[in-house]
Image 1 (cartoon, rainbow, N blue to C red):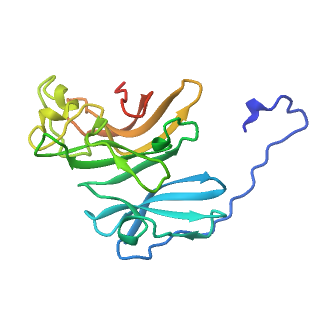
Image 2: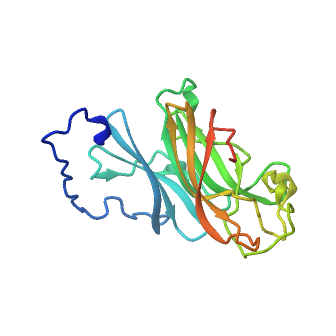
Length: 238
């Protein structure tokens, strides 16, 4: 809590306890764990559960699973694909965004929610569509990914200046890329964090985005953007 929640502060002084660095608690062990990156941790029924991104190579990326009783000592149960702790495989350019444990969700198949950045060939297209993809799970282990991105994305690329409004249809992935690049204005990108806002009663995602330069070129600078959703499927592009 912060000082705003304390009724009286007379005679009180806030002192923060120094953190104790323990080093890495989850380390690469398997051939598909060359590098560990983005992760999410939730306390579920007295057990800490972690979903983490693992690189075997730059194109061989997976989302793996680990559990702990104290947050320090972790094990990697082989409850995933092909007898491993891999839960989600790469469809073309996978980055773990975040995982939400939604204990108030009435739909049992959607208690666990995940967002990822991926680049997969969507039904009805012949090209990979980058964007924020949504997955649902009843137990945090078995996941189902929606076929199409809920937000079309731009991972980045070579700066290019376009005529006004030429890229306005990029939010509809059916229009395809422009010059082999996705130039969605103020799109989300590969870094994402989510939570449920109980006051506004909606899901909130803060994500990396790109802003155009003063002369109109794309991918000028990185920034942080905010998107919201009532159902975790339809997201705003405010």
